[in-house]
Image 1 (cartoon, rainbow, N blue to C red):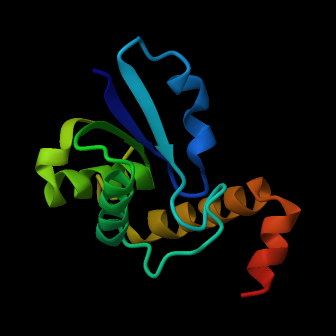
Image 2: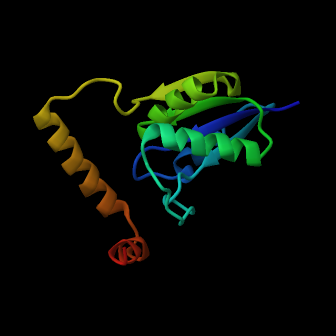
Length: 138
């Protein structure tokens, strides 16, 4: 019986961010990397992007894939969503690995402004031309 490790990406990322990590998993671990709604190959946006709403969305994805429990690994926004998932559905999370989870430390006002500016710049810089055109259509 294989165990599932669920990978959750950070803001501006996608399931592809975990491709190299997933390729190194030992036998008996099955990788499941999700694209949050509106990211990567999941073009359809979500109603809300707050971490608890995304955690509820992840539960639905696990249900759709018949995954009862998973080892959950999340980076940045994915780390925050993973933590919310552990609170929302603790029996679904057999282990938890958080990598620089969003909101793990409090930031001052100036730090928050810098972080937002850097995030937007990296997001726009990494976005494909098609994605930018789609964003302009909203």
